[in-house]
Amino acid sequence: MIVTSNKGKFLEYYQLFRENGFELKHYNLKYPEEQLGSIDEVARRSLYYLTGIIKEEFFIDDSGLFIDSLNGFPGVYSSYVQSTIGNKGILKLMRNETNRNALFKTSIAYYDGDIHIFNGETRGLISTEERGKNGFGYDPIFIPYGEEMTYAEMETIEKNRISHRYKAAMELMNYLKKKKI
Ligand code: ITT
Image 1 (cartoon, rainbow, N blue to C red):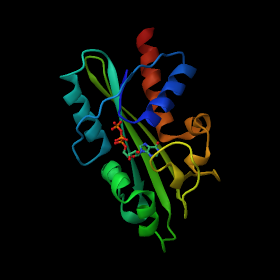
Image 2: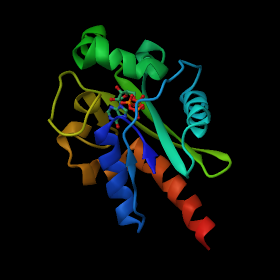
Image 3: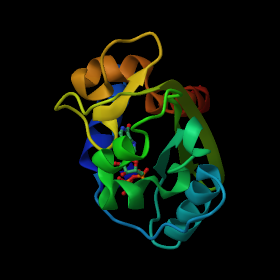
């Protein structure tokens, strides 16, 4: 089961899990997130908090966009920044910036009696304007290296071939497959 208030996230995981022969349930819950030093720490702390409430195996995903020329901002503040200045605000901050390199990171925290952390990262560029209608959050301004399209111009199935979330999900599913044997 995944615990998230973000429907886009759930849909990406649902598809990835189905492709790998797993069924995934969704628990739509907004849990408190402490702003700690790294997304791993944020995910670990949130998971620990939820183990007091949820009594079955579950995982959460904490993700963030780290922009090189902004020294890693918004990083662990990605959620707050998205809901305040949004993509337009980020593009404004970077208006005259030629270094547009950025990193998208996902940290999955999974609980099965113990806490396990799985990571995924995808590097890319921040576009100069918003493009595309698919996905959510920063998708319209993130172009993965080697691609022309932003995440938001891709279908979920395409984003799921290259994304930070896909890489972390594969780590988790490899762990689950090994556990089954
Ligand atoms: P939950 O914590 O309930 O899962 P959330 O949307 O708050 O949902 P995060 O804290 O992980 O999730 O996300 C931080 C921000 O980054 C938030 O604004 C997301 O919309 C955005 N984000 C996360 N993953 C993304 C992705 O794959 N593409 C674009 N934006 C993403």
